[in-house]
Image (cartoon, rainbow over all chains, first blue to last red; front, top):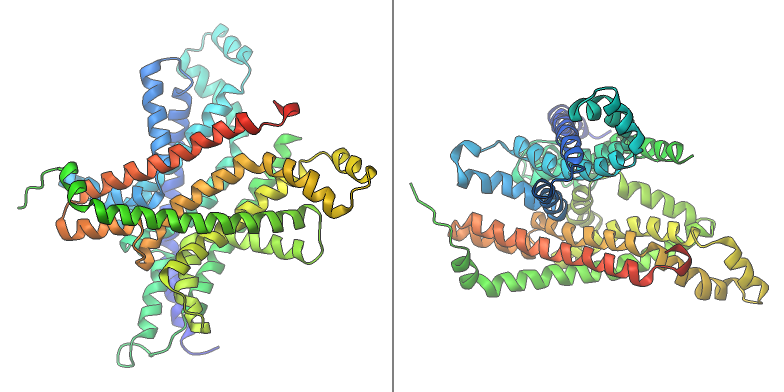
Length: 226
Length: 224
């Protein structure tokens, strides 16, 4: 293998990969919590609340995620300096806004698919609204939510690359920095162009992360239908 | 400290010509990509549904690669990687080709599912009536299958429109790049972001409204 390969691979995997996984973990956890809450609240027949949640879902599902990233990273600080976030944090927040809208929409469908008798039985046993949803309805709905949730995880991992656009050091940005370093003339870099191999390697890393998840989602989907 | 005053109307009235040009470029890239992605989707989707050897396997690999790698990395491969192999494309070409390749993969899945959902007895009936395999596809499978695939393929087209915003990274001046470049000069960031949000939501929401309209119009009689 040529000499330039090892340092590039090391840098991408030690500097980029952990941040990609960290942002994805935060984003998917946040999306799950906010999305399950909003999706469950969406089943309440209270018009103003429902209209508000609908708006949230339609806005963040409708916007290109890159625009949401820009709104969080460039827009929020103009409202208040305390809303200034670092690039990776801003990306995680934007991904939570988008991901929670996806989860909320799926949760609404899953909660409504649980037969009414389950609600009635839980009420008869003395559960209130919160207890009924937390202990009876959601545990059943989650089974149905599992396939879309696994695909969401794959999507979120891929979309962490949006941090690159605002300079957050994740896989793609790490690769881009190495690409620039190698391209720079000799005192700094090598003056060699290896863009195809470098970005191809990044694509391969993402494929290894994402492929098992999309397969798992397809498998869970199939098992659910049968 | 510079105290920014929010003046959306001022921003739009001073820059409307540039913003409009950006919007038109977004629509142009989307249109090219949507036409291309439909062609790719129909051809490869049909090949997969009919298990055409070689083409089916190629399509499966193509779909898995595109689905499991970030589109931003795909754009980098085309914009920075291909020139190394001697293929240098203009930003506009990179823009529509990259979203077309991405959309084509999702569309071949959409159309495969659509063609496979056409009941087998329809095809049997056509064959029994003396249609050859090609005219069975063109007269029976294609019109019914594309109608079944319509909602999911329009969802892919919506994603194509949204993904054109990623051309910001290659500096192609579509809507997102245009609005942000203006705001970099004038510091009217909130105004630029508002314009972007309104423009994209208007585009996306009207397209999803078209889906609902088409769904009721084109619903197959026996499915409604």
